[in-house]
Length: 332
Image (cartoon, rainbow, N blue to C red):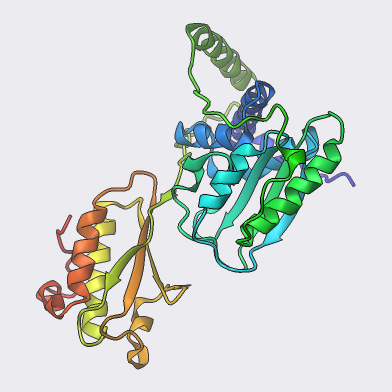
C-alpha cells in the first residue's frame, strides 16, 4: 500500500542530505561485498571511519543481505549464557562453503554486526546472555547444493551458540568463502574519484535543497565499544549507603571528564540502573563482586576508574564524601 507521506523527510535539506549520504554508503558497501568481503567487516570498518552511523546498520543489513543478495537467515534466542567463544573461533574459519554474518542485539550498544570468522569482532563481547537475540545470515552463493549448505550452516551455528562442541560438517569445508584478513586501503585513483563524486553530490544538493538556508547539522556517526567487565570486590563489611554515595561521586567525576562515555554496572547477572539498589536489604556483603564496564567511542582512564571504585567499595569510601553535596570531584 502506498504511503502518502513516505517521502516527506526528503522535503528538508537535512533530510535530503541524510538520505543521500545513506544511499552513497550502501553503494560503497555493495562495491566491497562484490569484491568478496564480509558485510560485517565492511560495516565495522565504516563505523570506525565514521562514514556511517549506528542507526544505519539494520536498514543496510536488511536491504543487502535480505533483499539484494537473498541470504538465508534464522533468528536465535540464546538458551543459556556463553562466555567462551574459542570453539566458535576455531570452527567457523573452516567454513569455506558459506559466508556468515551475525547480528547481535546488544542490550546496551544496540545492533552489533559480527563476522564469526573474525576474532576481532568478539573482542568487546564478554558474555552472550541467556534470552538475548541473534539473527544469523549465511550464503553459499549460487553453486550446487547452496540451499542445503546454508541450512546446515544455520543449524550448526545455532548449536555452537548454545555451547555445543559440534564438529564442522564436511559439506561446509570446501568453497570460496575463505576466512581472510582484508585491508581497506585507499589508492590515489580512489581519492580522485571520491573528490569527483563529492563535487557532484554538492551540486545535486544545491539544486535540490530549498532556498531557505539551514544550519548544517553536526556529524553524529560514532562507533561505540564496550570494555570487558572488570571485577570490583567489596572489601567493606557491607556495601552500604556510604559506598553508594562514593561510587556516585566517582562516576559523576568520570563522566564530567569524559561526557561521551557511559559506565555500566552489573551485579548477579543483572544490569544495575539505580546504584542505591545495591545496598537494599544488605544484599551486597563483604567478598561480593560488582562488575563494571565502560562504553563509548574514545575510552580513557579505565584503570583509574577501577582504582577509585575499589576504594569506594572499601572502608576508605569516606575520602570521597568530604566535600559539599553538589561538588563534582576532580579525579580524572
